[in-house]
Length: 417
Ligand SMILES: Cc1cc2nc3c(=O)[nH]c(=O)nc-3n(C[C@H](O)[C@H](O)[C@H](O)COP(=O)(O)OP(=O)(O)OC[C@H]3O[C@@H](n4cnc5c(N)ncnc54)[C@H](O)[C@@H]3O)c2cc1C
Image (cartoon, rainbow, N blue to C red):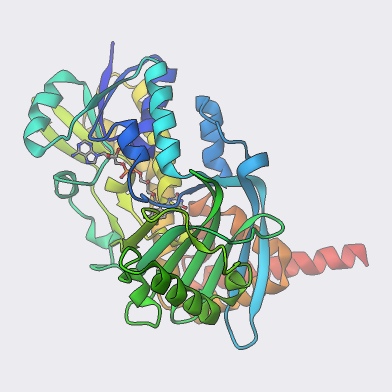
């Protein structure tokens, strides 16, 4: 069977998916609303770090353009801003890396067309779907914007929030010193929110993404509304004062004289309502549309999972398409079953981390600060959110994890004594 797949959207989901199809000789056309130059010129879209499991997929696609030796990082540094600050680090077994998506996506669009993929530039509306369905064997929807969010119904059971749980203020900044060893810093100001500091490659070279996840109603929330363009000096002074009070470990690495947004457009403010949606709809004449990426599951960015699982889901879907001869309901069900554990694992774990912490979670944090192997496993599991969730899903699981790690450390100490 000669297959031709239509893909709406050229985000990481659409592109990793399209590139995988081309690798297997499947005809793929992406229809998207922005060309590479337009993407490069946009305001900050997000601040995405790819964990090594996603970098492995880039390698397998032949789109691993930014080597970790030059741009990557090896650790997560955790800081809790308590009267007696709590600090510990976890190591990955292989490096992760952050590249500004306004550089990343245009490069992969070029890769896709160089490998025989076609891209058509226009915005798709609900009315266009029937015509599109007639051209392709299957429509893959890789955007939740416009009509597409409504097209796929939310799954209430997995979508516990009706509003954002964090007021986001994220920018790309100069004047922030990197950590040693190179890593992402996850700084928590209890009751006020988190700051995720990510080393990132952008248009002027290496900068730092400061993703401030502010608790609504808290002392940091105003950052999500403070306008940079109206008064850059005031914006910087307000931000620095809040960093000094709430995230002092990151503040200590800032050179006040050089600290500024890389460029005025490198700031994004807003919020995400974490939502899981149903994944397939019938378009008539037996044709189906299937969702991949954020339109399937959109998460709060605090644990850096959205793009990583979008890429994973794109691969699952692509591999199933390569094997399949029929694209019907059963096909969609099988794809969903294969990707479900990781997609839901990421969503549930992330939602746990933006909810008030349980005693057991606080116990785990304390245990990680005393047990390197436990901190390393927590860090490594950013690659495998389903494993993280298998450790965290209920109080007995958390307690079992701590007990197991404590026993392992005790045995190791005995062996070396
Ligand atoms: C501040 C922030 C930080 C983040 N950090 C991380 C991180 O560290 N790690 C991580 O894994 N994830 C992170 N994420 C999440 C990540 O950005 C998303 O999960 C990911 O980019 C989603 O990719 P996608 O391909 O599903 O959708 P999108 O990137 O939204 O792509 C949609 C595509 O569709 C096109 N399009 C839109 N409407 C139409 C239309 N009507 N017709 C045709 N085309 C259309 C768009 O132009 C675009 O090409 C972060 C998000 C934010 C906001």
